[in-house]
Length: 390
Image 1: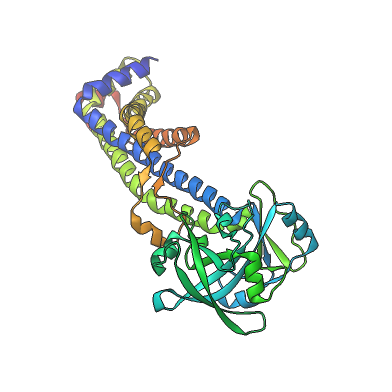
Image 2: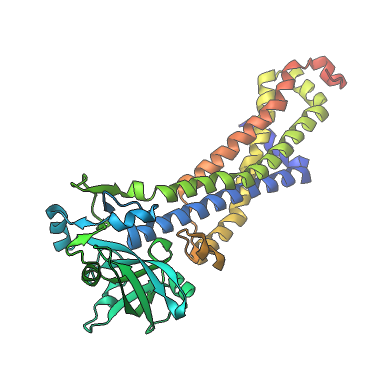
């Protein structure tokens, strides 16, 4: 207790030098928590949106399907097994049939994927109910990214050409009945959604599908013959890798800030040991052990982190709270990144994040303060009192 009082008095007595160190260290607190909160918020939003719009609780892929190989799409379709069809009839799963196609918006030519989905499905948030048209026209919905690249609007007609199961090319006009907005590009970019039975008829693939999406509250079971089960962990692996790389890359910023603050503390402690040699010698001569003196200087350095945490809370909590409520607006260019990024990212600050950051910075400050204090163990009290340096 006495050591804490002495350390506090010495820090306050140092005046501006102490508060400059504390301010820089408090910036490290705020920047680390803000950056990690942004990444955690992005991760949470992206995972939720991808589950709601694309992957559900998991998927079954036809054994020939490979989303990264466009040449596999022609052969990646098959009749649904009874085990999957039962779940589909119960409304727990929804099948999707995928085919390569070419569209001709305003006379231009553009590759696209035709995707058939049940208009009555409730597994994904896609507004598939808009496809429930009674007329003979082929209804289609597209995402905002697709609408921007093709310059299509609701009510427009566009010619679509495809090749059926027998290799015969055919073409027809589809009507854009809806344009949906989503943060998930994997259901938007280069894709045209039409009713599942209509696409099956066009491709001459009755009762067939390419993938089957499960309800987000359900769990994926073992693979079915001819179909490979893909759970959420597998389907979200790319997102997890991106978040991991962003975390490592962004760490450079707050590591630099932290090193600057720790360097200032280290220099302050070295200067303090040099200037206070007479005080150290007097303390040892009056009965303090070298270990107690070293502990005093180490506590002084560690208290920089405590004061910095208090200062960071004073201005950091209001700033971070405002951003957590209003979000961090992302530039419009992120739509072209091919990543699931919302217009606004709402940071997610957890108690574990705050406590781990405070503990990490506190330990670093303590270690940096201890290193120059070790020199005290080599001092002789008589030489210290005379002001001699060893």
